[in-house]
Length: 109
Length: 109
Length: 145
Length: 145
Ligand SMILES: Nc1ncnc2c1ncn2[C@@H]1O[C@H](COP(=O)(O)OP(=O)(O)O)[C@@H](O)[C@H]1O
Ligand SMILES: Nc1ncnc2c1ncn2[C@@H]1O[C@H](COP(=O)(O)OP(=O)(O)O)[C@@H](O)[C@H]1O
Image 1: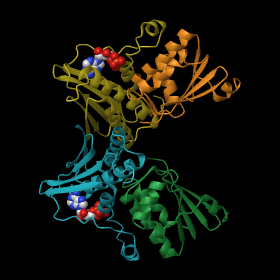
Image 2: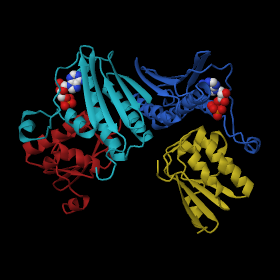
Image 3: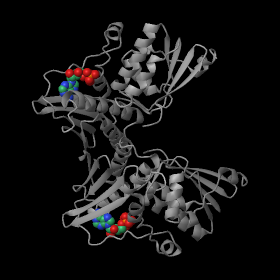
Image 4: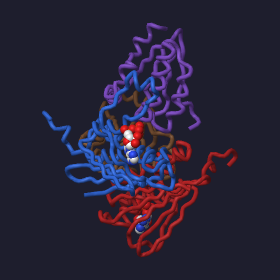
């Protein structure tokens, strides 16, 4: 509970926000969405450690979508499991937060 | 349920039995202890994937101890988590199934 | 038929207990990993609705979850002690410009439930709402289905 | 005080449901990872005893597990519907030459329970046995303790 829920990594115009909790749900939502106030022109949410996302979690992720539209930033998702890709497609989340590969990010370094 | 519970690897006098289930308990006990009929002079149980062991599981592991004593084989445990090392010490299981490091095993290859 | 019951107060942290139980029950009946993920999400949505909309976070009100398993199916019944509901909208809901701008970031739960389980039944009265989710065993895993 | 209840038939596969619930409840009260592992093992042993020795695998008999949480402690009560027991032996039990040769590969459960929780209480009658396990919050995490 005292561990950080998001760990940041920045380089150039890029911020990678590594979600550290396994569960993006009603409990972790507040701590996750708090990070949407400090985005960069290219912001990437890293789902590598995420095992579960429900609609309360999606609603937290939408805060990043809104902030990216307001600030004119690009928002990407990285390391999304096949199950969560399916879920993101179902609600067309993938339109607003497309997937990026770790390799593609390297070009910004 | 249809996946193998133990996967074997053999070289020289050594058999490494990789326990593939996360839970060494009443449910997996029978499938685990079945492997004790095919030991080698040096037999190593690999706990890398094991997240939980209870007394029903220990009782399955003791079948390997008994078989190793009968056959005059050496029995080792590998990749035992600190929690399970504590549990093994509590019941002095560690006396009959000491821990071996992956590096030490390499000398037998 | 076997029954596992999990009963929690209306605190969303305990939705995680129901979710973890769902994983274990799903494995016990031999569901595939993907169907377990689907069921966990559906159950999670139903339990959060029971806490939020049914029991309105009154901690003294309970959410009762029954897992009923037989040879053909796994049924999960989620019951709250709310005032009931007249109509539930299970229609498809997506993220779009309109709801992003209006700040409507919710409403995906029932749609997920509808899509992710084989069938779903509601019964509601002034004593509360029961949502019954069903997964038929092997149905989705069967070839050419 | 909050209460989470898990009720299972006397089938050892459902001990895993109780165990998974223990993890989530332990995390909800902020126990350290190591104490959660300790508690999981103790609860697992108590539930398996309730199934094996209390209910003697009669599937119609249930094992009821109540997690009661307050500011100071997490209490787990495991109740079976067996015939009760006169005396329980919590003494230390280790693997030794004697029991290896005689094929006695059991009997570690109560010793684990005793060692791994802060305290433990038994009450037993002809209607069944209740084992109450307690972990005091922060007790073991406190410095110089
Ligand atoms: N158990 C329930 N009791 C009362 N109303 C409910 C219940 N479940 C769902 N609802 C109603 O259905 C609506 C849609 O639910 P859902 O699709 O899960 O989205 P959300 O919970 O994000 O609003 C809720 O806003 C609520 O009005
Ligand atoms: N819930 C219970 N009901 C009746 N007897 C019990 C119960 N729990 C434990 N016992 C008794 O205590 C003994 C020791 O239990 P334990 O240390 O867990 O070892 P094991 O279960 O391997 O025998 C059991 O063999 C049984 O006789």
